[in-house]
Length: 205
Image 1 (cartoon, rainbow, N blue to C red):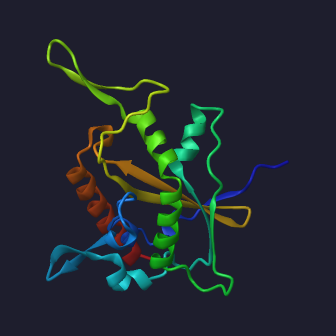
Image 2: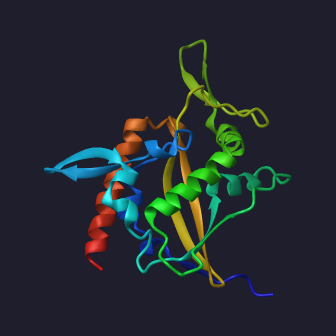
């Protein structure tokens, strides 16, 4: 049997919007914000109060997508007994476009449902800070002993989309606050940089 045909669709996703999201998967849905420009300055507003909420998540629009969490799929590479949760199907049977509001709402519920597994997967590779006698510090990762600091934020990072034999498959990537020794302020600045890049690319289409 031939392997599934994969086609990268990420450039059709509204990355210029997704990169502006401030989406804490551990927080309430209504607290998700988006960075917008006001009088030339970056500001924050609730996503669902923003006109971006009604924008199609892709261009051309998508009506049917299947969603998985990238970290839960990656867990299979080092834990062969692990089985990720079933994928989320978002289906508009009238073929209407999936909006940003619809996508975020359904995916947020899916992430909340599987948050314990997400925390474990993130904790598997996060590492606890250890201080040596000479004062040097490093993150110690112990297999089978996941660790995440208390009250940590786990934020939406990005999505990757591809087509596999007619189905649009989306992987959602997440960022645990402080992951890879990257402070959250740095994370936000990189996200905003990527948003600007996506906007420039979109204007060139």
